[in-house]
Length: 267
Image (tube, rainbow, N blue to C red):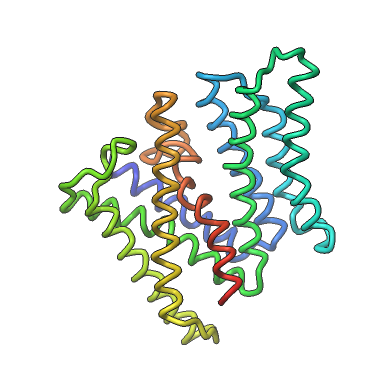
C-alpha cells in the first residue's frame, strides 16, 4: 500500500507541476473542471446509496469552472453570486417537475455536493488567477498535501493517540506533525520566493497562514471521511492507487481553498 501511495504521487506530481507552471489560466481552469467532474461523479456514486441525486445539474455545474477566466471580470462576480441561488432554483424546479419523485432529501444531497466540490474547487482557479498566482497556488498545495504527507509519516512513526472515530487511522501526533511539517515547508518555499523571485512575503504571516490552512485542510479531510462513514465506503473510488479516488486526494485542498484565497489577498 505504501509503495502504491508513493508511486502514484511520483507519477502524478509532474503532471500537476506542468499544468500549474506552464498552463495559462484557461488551461488550468479546464483541468480543474475535469477534476471537479471526476470528484462530483465519485460523490454522487457515494450518496446514491442513500438518495437519488440530480446528477445532470452537478455535472453541468462542473463546466462552469472552465469559463471563469473567459467571462469578463466585470460580470464574473455577478455570475458567481447568482450561481448558487440559480442552482437551488433549478433543483426545486426539478422537484416540482417530477411531481416529487425527486424529493427534498435528493436535492439537498445534490446541492451540498455541488457546493462542496464545484464551489470550493472554483477558488483554486481564483488563486491561480491572482497576481503572482503561480507562486501563491503552491502555498495552498503545500498546506494541503504537505500536511497529508507529514501527518502520514509522523503517524506511522509515533502515532499513539487516536484523534477521532471519523477517521480511525489518524492520530493526534500525526495531525500535529502534519501542521508543523507543512509550515516548515511553506517557510522554506517563502525563502526561495523572497530570495530568487523578488517577493517580500512576511515569514510570520506565512507561518500563521500555514497553521490556519493546515488545520482547515485537516477538517476537510475529516469531513470527507465523515461522508464516507455515513454511506459505508472506504474510498470514493480506486482511481488513484494507494490514495483512493480523486475526492480522496483533493478533500483537504478544496476545503482550504476559499480561506487561502481570502488570506492571500492580504499578502
